[in-house]
Structures are given as C-alpha cells and as structure tokens.
Length: 466
Image (cartoon, rainbow, N blue to C red):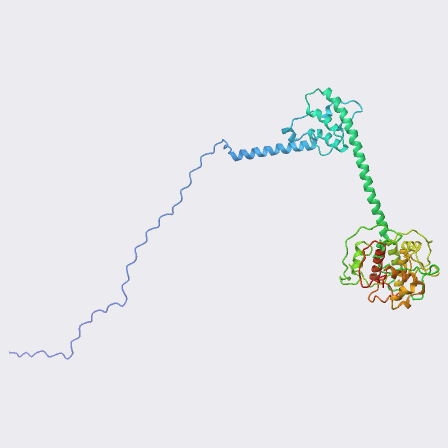
C-alpha cells in the first residue's frame, strides 16, 4: 500500500478576489431633449374686401355746402353791384333793392338857358335819391327854405303830369341855384377876408421878429472887446445923456410910456440849463422868454453873465419900442451895410434911443456899460426927471462914478423904479458892462413902468421911495 501523503500547503497565500468595478465618476449623460415641433407659418392678415365700384352719380350736397354756395353768390352779386354803382354814379345796390327808382331830373325837358340843380356836380352822391335831397341842403345855406319845398314837390307827387312839374321844378331850381350861388359867394368872400386878416398880422409879427432872431443867434460879437472907459461918452445932444444899452438879450416887444408895440403872442417859457430857480434873475428871464422878448442859445443855455454889446442892445430896443422917428439917420463909419444889426441900429438912432460917438462911429461890438443901458431906456420911456437929481442918486454908495452927463437920466431911472442892482442894491456899478441877466431885469422893469407887466417885488429893485 502506498502511503499517500497529504498535499503540501502552498507557500503563497491565495489571491484575493477581484474588487468590484469602481463606479464611474461622471454621471450618466441625460438623454437628448426631444426635437422642438416646427413653428406654424406666420398668419397673414386677411386682405380687405375690394371696394365696390364708385357710382358715377355725384353725392348730394349737404346743408352746410348749400349755405356756403349761397353766401358766395350773394357776395359776388353785392360786389358787382357796388362796383357798377361807384363807376357809373347811377347805380346803387341799396337803392335798387330798397328804394323805388324815381325819374331822373336830367330827363326832364328844359328850355334853353335854364339851369337845373342836377347840372351842379356834387361829389359823393351815388344815387338819384340823394341828389333829390340836395336842394333842401343847399337852400338852407342860402337861408331860404322855399326852394327846398318846391324842389321836393316832384319827388313827393310823382303821379302828376310831367308838364306841370317841369314848370314848377325849373322855376324852383333857378331860384335855388341863384340863392345858393350868392350864399356861397358871400361865404367865400367872408372866409377869404377873415383869412387875410390873421395872415397880415402874422406877417407883421414875423417882420418885427426878424431882426431879433438874428441878434439872438449870434453870441455877443463884442464879448472880447475893450470896455468903455468911464470918461468916454456917446455923441448926443447938449447934455449928451442918451446912450446905448445892451442887446445880448433877444429882441423884445415891450412898449414905453409914449411908444407902443404890437403884442407878441405868449409862448411856452423855456427852462434854461444855467438859470436855476434860485437865480436872482430867474423870474425876469422866465417872463420875458414867455413873451418871446429874450431867447437862449441852441444848447438850451441863457448865459446870464455874458456881457451885452451896443449892437445887441439896439436890436432889443428896436423890438421892444415902436416909436415915431424924431432924429435923422446917421451914416456911421464903422457900421458896414451888411452888418447883422444895421437896421436895428438905424432905427434906434432915428427914434432917439441911442446915439453914436464923436466922428460918426457907433462901436456896435463894444460892451455896453450899465449906465448906458439905463440912459437908453429912460430916453425911450420919456419919464419926467426929479427936481433934485443929486438927492435921487444919493442912495448909491458909488454915485461918484456916475458920469456927469448921465446924472439926470440915472436919477430919473432911480425914481421910476428902473434900476436893478445885484448883488448889492446900494452899488450901481455904472461903468461895469451889463450882463444878459441885468438887461433882462431892466427890460422887465421898463415893461412894468409902461403898464405891460405886473409889478414884481425883489430886494435888488431900487424902489422910488429909497
């Protein structure tokens, strides 16, 4: 027997069983989405049904259209009738619709030499009815109502025979035409006469102011000339008292005691830029400017402190006073014929207001002293001198400066209230050049003395009682 030996154990351990498969790290992909169903085709709007063929017949007009057509036709007819009436003068839309057509007067038979009222052209009458009403209006102008009554008879009684109306109508028309013509002629003559009167007065006023405008426009030509020496006196009569006065003011229209001047219509006062309300001569300047006696310069200034020349003074005197000539004219050697103040100087000399210097010279561009202004104004006023001239001038502190030939005239001016002294009433300053403001004040006082201006109270006016 054989002895079997047990199997020998394996020297290697048995291999472990295989590990189960590892799960996949990625999730299984989802199944694909089912395909989208196809989109339905776009719906097309149904096409409108074809319009039925239009009817060949036109639509009936509504009420508004009929009204518009009627208004349009009425407007055209009105315009057409109006144009015919304006052009022919015989057709009126108003008369054709609302008034009966009366027989025309022109169709009535007339005898030779007769004139009817219809033959007179009357502008603005468009119809026969208006023409028939004319006799009444025209007759009233003549102051007689009978022609209008007889003229209305043919229109009121249209049933009468034309033969009877012809005689009455022609007679009334003849009477009417003669009266109307006479009345119109009288009115024309009266109106022409009334129109001629103001024109002549206006011409006279313009003639009076012609020289004044020249003297005002020119700025005192002698502003830079030498002053008159106290010893020089103008040539005059035995006393040598009449001398010049300033003309730096515009022409004046103020009369004196004996001379008279045509009144100048008042004008609006001018407010001068260099004459304030508190100026000492403001009142005198305002009043004289209202009367167109003085004027300013184009720049609305008055220049109250500007000296006045002898030529300017002559222009003022010639316009203020209207006096009869008492002296002969002098042919001054220094006065050209074309000098702006030549006519005024000649007039001032012939009326006795001003005189020249020895040698037949006038010195028109020389500044006029205050003493000469007062002497000239006193000569024009022809005031009576006081019995004691020396006593009258005793109110002035500088009476010794008054020239001997002017003492009586200055005394007369003092007693008359003609002297105006500024700034010191007791200082006359006789040889000082007169300014435009001073001359304005003296001219105003001359108007007061002659009764052409109201008395004004001022501390610078020398009262006759002083």
